[in-house]
Image 1 (cartoon, one colour):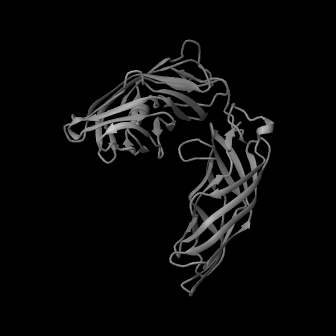
Image 2: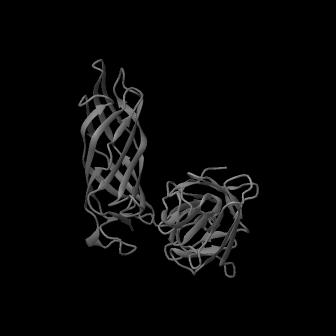
Image 3: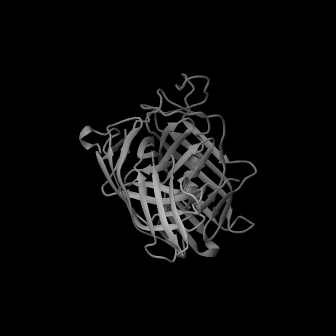
Length: 391
């Protein structure tokens, strides 16, 4: 079974309401429609609209919730309704039940339930062929394991999930513990596979918009000209590292500045500065210099509400180190790589926004001798002011 990602107990609530996005879909600018057939085009034929959805745990699988204490459930049954044609489309989970839950082989010592009036409400955003994001607006889940003294309440609001290909994906999605007894785990790992009863397709009436604009506000779907970001100043939130097979190079910080073009598809971001401060290899001090040999251009494409991907062009990073007084590194690395860009307040920890290089491989462009063939760039840059990604 495929591991879905790092999440908390509230995902037992949100997971099943997502998997109905299990067939071809395309983003609609003005509307989204669940449909019983998909013969041609993006528009749902008259009389084929779907207003209710049923999901169950796939036959032959179990739901595994892995945390400080692992809980397994043998069955999920969920009913959800769409709340009208819209973009995004609201989805309400009207009924949920979880059976055979427990911490041992008997699957009987725990229960997962939804408190009265706390059935989850979601927004479904489609942004590509068979891909989208489900965002939890509200909802709670109660986990009780009486023999262990666990009675934990979790909040689903703010949780986001990628959907597509009949799967749901949660990547390091945090939950918020509202209260509980004993040691209620705040995060965990869910491994589950859900399927929809019957064929359901996600259709709309126009093609997806990938036009991106970095914006100072997030009050509307589009960014007014007066609010468009014209320049960026970003600093790393943790020491950036260039991992390699000879000696990892860590810097105290990295700073980037850039000019931002007008609304575009993609939107161009031209770096005017990318500097690195106090760099060294492990156990040494000041034995490395990291420089930007060529300032890159970033092509920003919007992938979902307040989310995007920035692709580099012309990036060249130079490393000059003396390791143990013997090994000399004088190398240049670069290449075209794609970096996830999250808008301000997109999720907990995002802050003003976040441009992330998560061990992105850069190829060797220049250098001989001890120069490794590649380095892995690991850094997280945050703008100094709020930046949102809108149309």
